[in-house]
Length: 543
Image 1: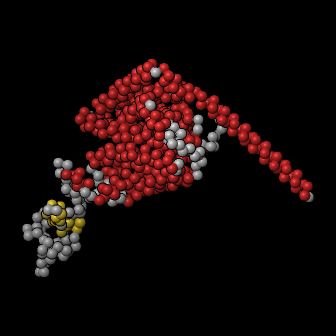
Image 2 (image 1 turned 90 degrees about the horizontal axis):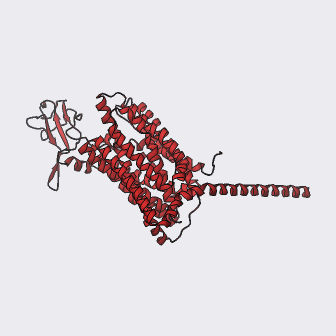
Image 3 (image 1 turned 120 degrees about the vertical axis):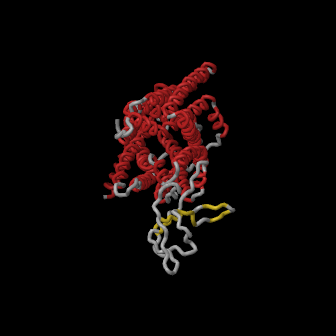
């Protein structure tokens, strides 16, 4: 089997795009926490961001379909990711909480005047207060390590006089959150995170739309393109982790500058690839009635709801899987020495042993089973995976269980993107992809939110058991609803088999298409030979 050079640029995009985002997106919650954002605010940010996709994914797809400016919207998404992730490095850290021990800022002798010197020289006093609207806000704290000495002119001469840096006043009634929201540093950070997520969701919508436009009728080959994104993600996570550890040895803290450089370089290269992509320009049709019928067609709606159910399970996994692994490891051995190694192995298993083979096989699986049956298998895979997580006591057992990542995510992602492409009316491909993608990513936010409530109240393993059991029940309900629809609407059976029959016919259609392209190439070669021969005859006649 030769290389499909027509799809090679799309493979390059997936590889470069995930090589660019992989070094940072994995570490974004850690970076946010390192910049001084409290843990519960970090959780709130990652609960809010997925809901952004409801607006950005649908609007980006609709704009691209209406203007037929798919390339421009595509480039905008990649550019927004690159700018936001690069700017994130230069956002300032938040002031530390006042309860945290912060190194004092030593003042030179003679800095404190009699008017600013406390009469009894206490250990520390609030200073530099301002009143806005009648409310006093401590901006800093003066700290004296010993009573200040004063000279004849009344100036403080004790070199141990010190003043701490500005700090946030924390309280137990949620005041810490409001103090954080009142910092301009937080909003600079949030703007960068918001921008990268908007670019991320826009880029996903457009890359899937363009990929299916290039594939044409060969939708079953989507997994063979998308797998290069997984390869890029796995390689970039390993490379970035090693470079960050090496660069941070002399820093005293984790410095993610190498990851930011990798992101800028690979996303800049991706911009070049996207700008030169050759894909058919979609037709623009006024298909509002057709689009409405496609969106609310009952079986499409059932698959759309199932996409949301998958998103909830993924949201729980993406947010709490590694936290559960850490909890189990510490219960197994309080000073578990191989935690970082275990987390790295889990990422490697998910990328290279689970996603890669199943993305490559997804086309054949969907062709043989059909979209609905493939959805059912993946839902069962999610259910089994979550329930097994709840039963693990030895942390090393997470490695073989994570092989189910291929049966679950590795099947369902190509499945619902291919399904969205198959049911979208002409001229509304990006809009339909945006609707399915927005449903999935918004549901990941629901999964993180509900998972957080359960995790706090019941613990990690009970949370995974409950969500796993609920996913299994939904899988059975999904299969039962589809069987009922097929029984009640015999015509729908033929239509649904279209997902299977259509896939069965894809190979024949693709083969015919390849034969036609080969014939066209041969005809073009014959024309070139004939023209070359005619030119030689003309030259001979002239001579």
